[in-house]
Length: 72
Image (cartoon, rainbow, N blue to C red; front, side):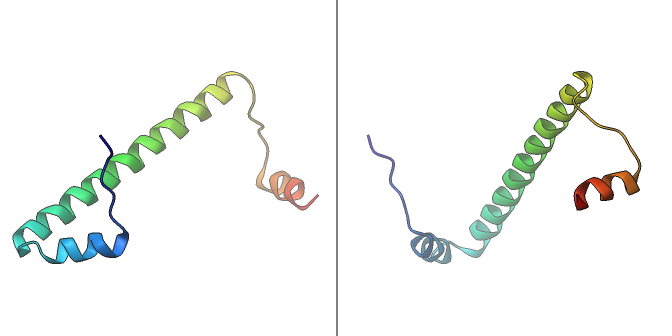
């Protein structure tokens, strides 16, 4: 069974047809899901950074050394 898809403008129009209370609820659901996805992405990045650090793949240095490396 194919998943139905909507173009963005169709989606906006469909949301406009919802009662105000339903729209507000939808906004909260979307915000919550977006926050959860950002948090999951951050967790993944932290796990990766910790693994790289544990494997010795991270450099240490001063800000001046970093800027010098960037400029070269």
